[in-house]
Length: 237
Image 1 (cartoon, rainbow, N blue to C red):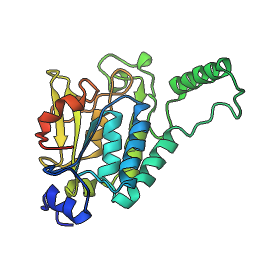
Image 2 (spheres, rainbow, N blue to C red; image 1 turned 90 degrees about the horizontal axis):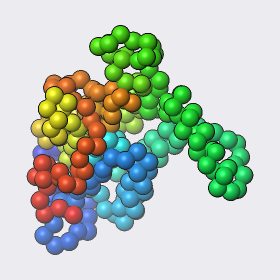
Image 3 (cartoon, rainbow, N blue to C red; image 1 turned 30 degrees about the horizontal axis):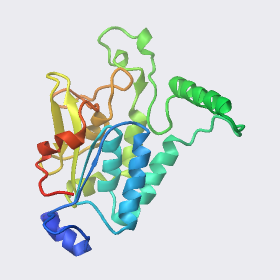
Image 4 (cartoon, one colour; image 1 turned 90 degrees about the vertical axis):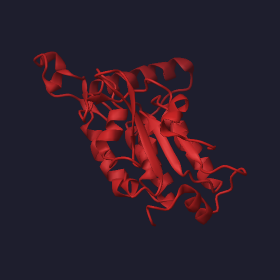
């Protein structure tokens, strides 16, 4: 598909139903960890209704979901979203949980403790050496966990060449730690790489900031629904 095609042209080609006067459909996904699983369900409902976004943007877990959506063909997006969420939640704590709130609370507490000690599959792992044993200023002293597993997951599930072909407009939000200002990485203005998505999902001291230019730390410091004007989204549903 020609990367120069405008969103309205793409929409007509897909015959997406939309309100009169709506130039594009944007999907804006905020951060919030487990909230991302609900976001995947929202996209599934849109997809099954024949509605595909022209523009996808998000922060933190929303940035990861956005990258999977924008970095795959429509017929593969649900499969890739499902693969991601099954991967990071695949660890089984108990083979069987008896019925009752008390047992569920114990299971959830155990799950949290295992995550603290072992990380999350395909997402993050305890940093080695531990930051408690690292010298001040060392990279290993900046976070408790290493997000290298997330890079491998993104490279496996996201076609960044498709994102950079601009078939779908894509942007992720992060925070510049030098001045505290919000910043968006937008495929309309720069080439997107896994680091941009990882930066949006970084939350020191748990996950490390990502060094780009300038040094940035991705965090849900502001809701993208309030900051969408940064991306100049107009007449958008």
